[in-house]
Amino acid sequence: MKRVLTLVFCMLCLSAAAALADGNSEWMYSRLNGWMRLASYTGNYDGYVSVDGCGGVTLSDEVMVSVISKSASVWAEPRTNSKKLSSAAHGKGLWCRIDDQGRPIQQNGFYAVEADGKDGWVNEDYVVLNDLTITLLESNVPAYIAPDKTSKKVGSLSKLTKYRVIGFYDDFYIVNLRDAAAAYIPMSVRHRDNTFDRNYHGGGGYRREGTAYGKTTLRTGPGSRYPEIGTLKAGAAVTVYDVIDDWYLVSDPQTGEWAFIAPDSLDVQL
Image (cartoon, rainbow, N blue to C red; front, top):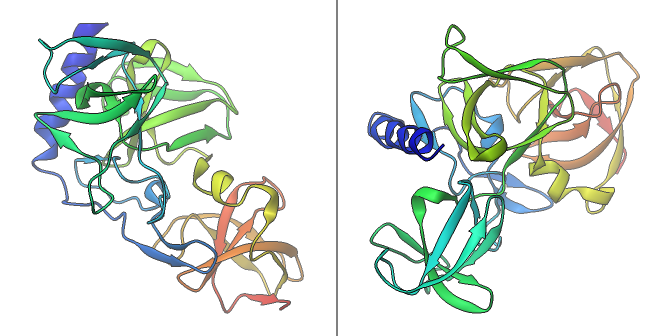
């Protein structure tokens, strides 16, 4: 397992040099949450793009890293030959210590963290700086050993299962599977992520009722460049949870999946 993880991380590091600097995870303006970015709804990646700092984060979010290896040691200093303070299990979140600009403190390839009430350091190869997860909305989703649909499958994933995203490669998610292994899932499968589940839980904030003017396209992001994921019939009623870059964020009445509607396609009651 350690060898597999090492190979995966080495591949990601080598690929990163040829990747887009920041993918398409641009900041967008949300009427409810201010400036934010919607990592898993951007698509069109070229090579490897790190998911760190993505996942629908807003400028006011706390900074946390999550363990994606089987376990991660917390050291007294940013080096592995210092005193070991504790060990964090797979999936555990560790609060980062931040600098005056609110950015996580890093040194020698380690994050400065708080663990069990103590200040320590954790190797950045064993954690990821985001809480982005996806929930699958279809069954028998293939998970591949490489970002290629002709590569070996490492599993067939079930509907409504949730996976931590640790990076993007072209049109694939790199996800954290059981026992901390990494695998590739096509972005084209039906899914939702916790960007909206987290920010709009309970339906508070902007919430408005809307009606489709005519046959209306539902998209995965706020713009016509994002893929279509469904349609509404004329007169269909939806609940609007936010307005992001002037596009309405709604919940698909048929699937419950988050989707976007163009501003001129919906009559919204103020």
